[in-house]
Length: 140
Image 1 (cartoon, one colour):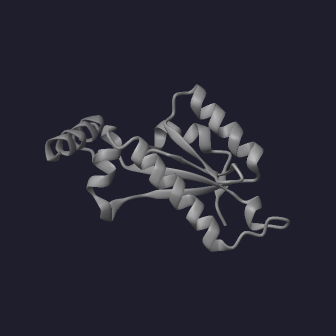
Image 2 (cartoon, helix red, strand yellow):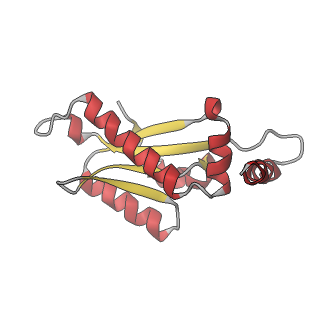
């Protein structure tokens, strides 16, 4: 297992130009803002749980990708960015766009209601995915 992780770190370092730091990997999450407001009024803890579910699922599904392996290797340096989507329709549209562009992600569906609550990407270099996320602001 250590060889695979070392290999992943070498891949990340190779992506940086000579003399530059390795690319920073970020895991983006997009959480529905409307769930925190009426008529839903979910408590903060429930929203945090949805983001945790989505992030964990995305990491697990893509655990063998070199970016994910490198991201998990340095636990103290993990970077996550939580953005907000105004509603379920917007979140599902983003999932469709990412699917069409072959961007690895997980759309978390809360059960048993089957409600899309949060979308998490696997770790990516920011530059690769920022064009798809630039319209979303930080979750507040």
